[in-house]
Length: 147
Image 1 (tube, rainbow, N blue to C red):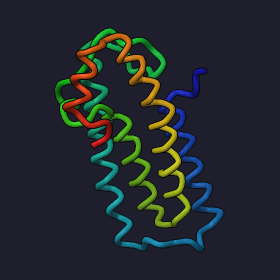
Image 2 (cartoon, rainbow, N blue to C red; image 1 turned 180 degrees about the vertical axis):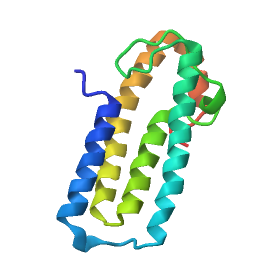
Image 3 (spheres, one colour; image 1 turned 180 degrees about the horizontal axis):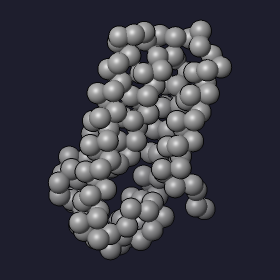
Image 4 (cartoon, helix red, strand yellow; image 1 turned 45 degrees about the vertical axis):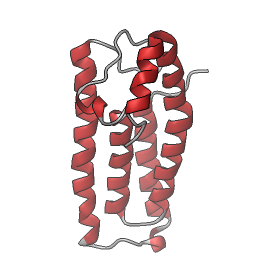
C-alpha cells in the first residue's frame, strides 16, 4: 500500500502544527527570545535535507520513497545517517515547533517521527535490502538509521 510522499506529509504536518498552535495558544511553553533558537534548528535542518538530496542527484538515483533506487548512496552525509532528509524534516518540524512555542506542535513532531520510522523508513529498508543485499546490510551495521 502506497502512502503520501514524505514532503506532502511534512507539509501537512506544518499546517497541523500551526492550526494546533492557533487553537490551543494557552499551552505556550517557549517564549521570546528563547523561541528564536528554532531558526538555528531550521537552518541545520535545511542543510541535512539539501545535502541528502544533492547526494542522490549526484548518484542519479531516485528521491521518491516508493521509487526503485539504482544506486546505494553511502558517502557524504550518508556516512553519518542513513536518512538525512528524514532527519532534516524532523528537525525542520522541531524548529517550527520551538518558534511557535506552544506544546501541541511538539505532538505533531512526535507523530511525524513515528510515522516516518514505521511507514517510510521500514519500507525503504526492505526495498534496499532486496536490491542491494549484503552491501546494504554492511552499510546498516556501520551507519545509524537516524543519528
